[in-house]
Length: 360
Image (cartoon, rainbow, N blue to C red; front, side, top):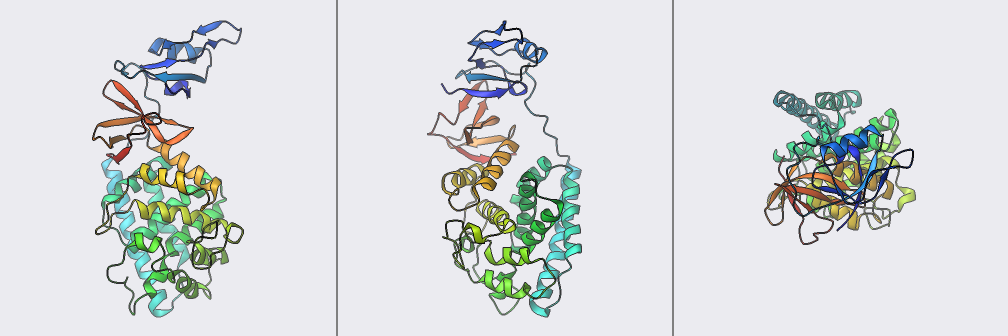
């Protein structure tokens, strides 16, 4: 049975403590193989014990008397509606700005677009809610402007997790909004090509859009790092990207953030003829295949923070059983512990199962 180092706040009934736990004076507080109960949690808390090693029984009694591990803020329906309203306003403003640049060669109103992003973020109140509401928006219609706003927001979230300065977080937001503007130059009008999908675009089918986008913006009053991100957001640190096939040292930090945000949003996107992947499938894919392509520190930060955000979400497994994520394994981030009724399934051990769908 796999063992994990678990914070005291995350202990639940059905977990088994797998090491002797000592007080500050050296006395044994909790002996090895003690089942977790409410009294055990209270004793550990009283003695300021932050972490213990645990494993899990295949079956367990109800954990109702153990406090839930995280106090994840609940999203109110009114908050969701306000978020959607701000998002729709942002889509309209962004489409007008991008089309004006493409068809009329106008300048971009960067302050206006950043104000839109800030309005969306303010409606979510915190990063946990922002991640959850972006996830809920995945059921809505996708398109260039929705995708661009999503990438801007995911990029800003990652930039915050990376402790970027406020100024650089704004640059990430601007780059996210503009990163695919070149797609509007692929046709004679300001429309995407017939049959276009972002999944194909991610693989390089419309690779010249990065150069077209850069050419649209190169003479505009926009920070050089943003222009470079428009050109290089499909470049990869191993030189396998496009259009220039440059490596990590020639890809600025803004572009590295946008590359991860763009990939994640595209791979979880619903498009005609394409079944969207669950966030855990995408994060597992990036974990297995992404560290030689993306900035490894950024990718690790993105995966670790985002997987922890899904604690307490209900999920459907590949065998169609439904349960709740209760713990993220820091040594195997994309294969968490799932509680189904009174039992636990450790996906780090059960390699034959995976999370097929996140239900809420």
